[in-house]
Image (cartoon, rainbow, N blue to C red; front, side, top):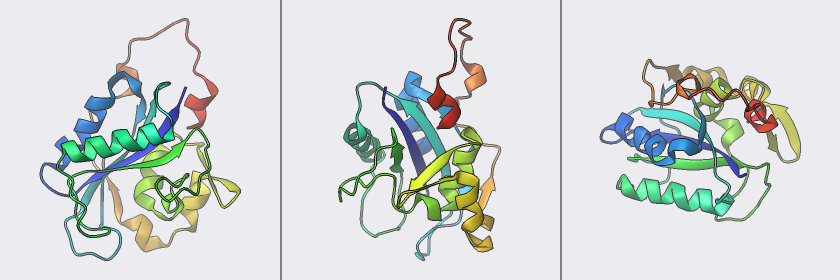
Length: 187
């Protein structure tokens, strides 16, 4: 099974609809979805605030490049145009981690090289994986520890909303015979 942690964001058009397009496309592959957060733009470009969330999903047919391609397809379906680095976008889908893979490939660096520096990734990720970890440069740490390293302004720019993406684990039909696997607790 291939488990991916995806960070999704939008600050153009119907931001919530763009985020929901991801959860709708992933469907039964979803393990967990964070609440939606509003976040200040990152990277110094003057633009509207983002809506952000984190999705944990499983698909045995996808490897890390498959998750990247799927994310790019979802971005294209939302008319994502890459004009300016860290600029406004209709939809951004980043593969943060995939099965603990470590890769320095320029097309897909894993884990995401800046995830540990971004409260808009760490805060929603903690909602779905309170004991989650992230390995950066060979150092495996709790997400809470990476978040504590960020400056106050970075953390203060992330605000939980009442918005939901239409998926909650409690909405799933119970399966009495199924025990959660280790990855579901770890994410």
